[in-house]
Image 1 (spheres, rainbow, N blue to C red):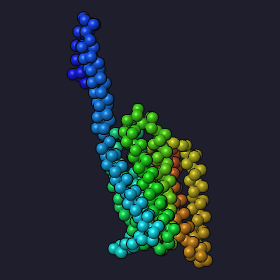
Image 2 (cartoon, helix red, strand yellow; image 1 turned 90 degrees about the horizontal axis):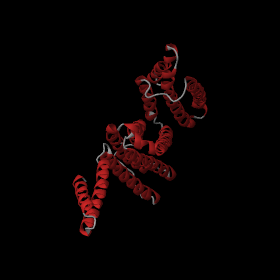
Image 3 (cartoon, rainbow, N blue to C red; image 1 turned 180 degrees about the vertical axis):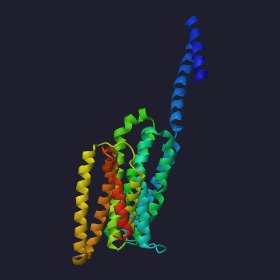
Length: 326
């Protein structure tokens, strides 16, 4: 670009002396095209070599591969040719899926934050997220292969693919934002939409997994979810709260009441209709996760130390409950 610019200036100087020199006009046009092309190449190279771009491309390739594998498994399931996986139990496969989904869920906001304004972290975060999709897909296909109900097979595979699709959309948006605050301003809406889509996909798949696990008498995943929520409480609030204490207080009270109702129903159903305990246990797990999520910003916006201790109280309470096998 610099060499062509120098040639452009030299040619222009010659034309200033002798403007009626046709060959020089042709040379000037050539230098002008070269300068223009060089600027475009420079911009492209700067964008391609920006932090995180290579990692985004690699993560996108991983997710595309995962989606192809899910598609192949879905076609096999439709034709009743998805061979059951014999080297591992259904419980282990469910646990693998729940663990992977939880880790992916934990990385949604970090990836979005890096895409908005932390270019140096973008590559690391997207690589972290991508590494959980391969084990998730393998476990999902294995779990589907061991599921006798055809509709449950398809639901599991479809919801897993939906999560991969939403993650893929998020990675494309994160790559475009690139961790540049000025660039991210143009992609903010798309990024927020991708985050919401991923959260909804995680919630849907988690619900399906917990219901399937509880129906089979497997509660390890739900216990892990509650334990993880407790651990996140111990870590303290992360980021600036978006609402006021009253907002969080209202939601927490509503959720706590819902937990109390669910617990009472579980006590009743344990003797009258044990088959419904799985769904109730799953609801209890989801409600506590929501409660723990609200407790952190509530503690941060509280006006006195006594109220700030709420989060710690919830952590201790549920920690003891878990130890007691409740």
